[in-house]
Amino acid sequence: MGLIVQKYGGTSVANLERIRNVAHRVIRTHNQGHDVVAIVSAMSGVTDSLIALAREINESPDKRELDALLATGEQTTATLLAMMLTSMGSPAQSLMGFQVQVRTDQCFGNARIQDIRVDRVRSLLSDHSIVVVAGFQGCDAEGNITTLGRGGSDTSAVAIAAALTADACDIYTDVTGVFTADPNVVSKARKIDRISYEEMLEMSSIGAKVLQIRSVEFAMKYNVPVHVRSSFSEEEGTMVVNEDNGMERVVVSAVTMNKSDARITLRKVPDSPGIAAKIFTPIAAAGISVDMIIQNTRASGKTDLTFTVPKADYKVALAIEKQVAKEIEAEDVFGDENIAKISVTGVGMRSHPGVAARMFACLAREGINIMMISTSEIRISCLIEQKYAELGVQALHTEFGLDAA
Ligand code: ADP
Ligand code: ASP
Ligand code: MG
Image (cartoon, rainbow, N blue to C red):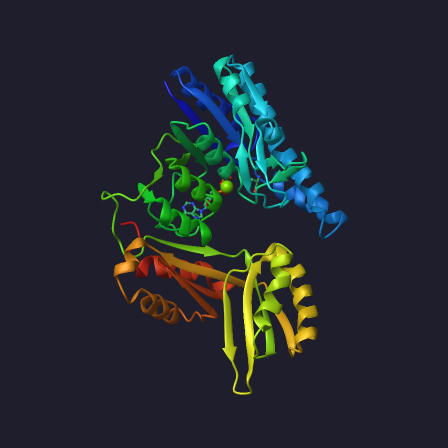
């Protein structure tokens, strides 16, 4: 007898028939004698449609209202699953983020979990009820509804599993696990049986949306073993765990791409102390995170500065920089949304030099131009034109010997 947390993503709860399938799986686990807490996402497409509706009213909707709107997506599925379970003979109750209580900061749209009180979940479980929790949402200290960023139901699940010290945290999705590349892009991608938190963290940070990055941070911090698997099959998935000796030590373990950023360039910026701070302070103040940054010095003593931001923040960031450019007397500012970041990652890179050179040579052979480069100890990323993203990922997957036989 254990306590199992199961998270079901959007495609797994896309309609009533799928919600019924999910209910069967939850009941099966419950009938094995386990306590079950099911965390659900909104039906696939619902979050996007709600955002589009809000944007019909205002291109930059009020963030507090938007969060309250988006939370209804998960509220719908949580209540439907609870009704379904009860109608199938296994009493269940739904809880929203504020009822659990998932306490967050006030950063609407990208709130961080600060504390979770699981007393109510525990008392329902002790009454032998199945508990269904709406993922992706929490509430701030004033009781406002907040959301945890796109893909945030993964984080709800892992954080609740940590708070409950659950015996297992299963993430049910539409692929059978974590692959060496997105299996919907690279047909020869291979499933990884076991992956370390550290490698998964890198993969999530560079675009493998199969797990939201904050869910991996939580799993690593609280040592929650996460099992990523499909809700459409019985196949064993991928275990995300502490690094151990049984793991493959390949140089590159995965290739990812990310089309969710845009780049902004300030041209002919005066090259003097304090300029970078003037460029980035208002971006930080607007709550926008910057990923890659590159600075080129010109012979004239001026520099060009380019950086990337999430596409969702692109228009706001561009407007901010147009203002900054006037103040610092930069020549002009322009932006580009047609970019993609492709990356290779693997813990084996630490001890194998030459990975970057091999990556650049591979992209060159495909005629793909590299606009920006960034690295970490176990990752190399290149910014390229968006139309080459799939080609680049496929070529790198083959280059580093990851293709399935
Ligand atoms: P859910 O709605 O269940 O949360 P997501 O769409 O958020 O599902 O995440 C699953 C998707 O992640 C897959 O359909 C797949 O296209 C994508 N993905 C990207 N990179 C990878 C990878 N390396 N391994 C597995 N899936 C990946
Ligand atoms: N429904 C939210 C989204 O689409 C959260 C999630 O699915 O995890 O981003
Ligand atoms: Mg997801």
